[in-house]
Length: 151
Image (cartoon, rainbow, N blue to C red):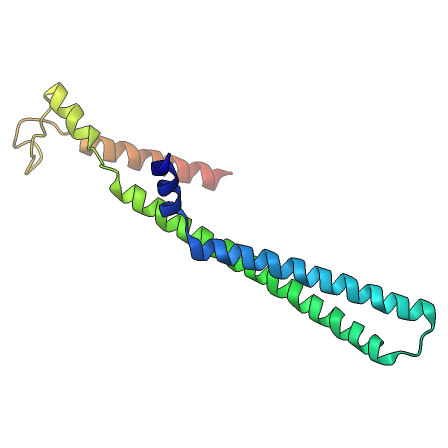
């Protein structure tokens, strides 16, 4: 059981977790300050009190709460961006570790097909077929251009 726990802890990015936790905590504290200050302002308005020091403190608390909410949300967005960046680096390192096998080469080996080098057309006695493919492609392109011009 200790091995499973140690494996999880080694894969855990503690600064990233701390950034997420700090963002959430700051957002919650900001919401609490904002809601309590708004409640104090509402009480001031309904009681027709003359305690302006309390009123100004409630306004300051509302401002502070709003700023804390903004900072907490910004912290969570930074944590999300960092997590995406770290995850991309992890995926890229895994992709680099994958061994690429040339299946075409293995397929040619199984069939016993070998490439015949052609220096000039007709010298090797083997028709490559590439010239025919090029002519066919050119013919198709010209037909396509003609049909586009006609329409």
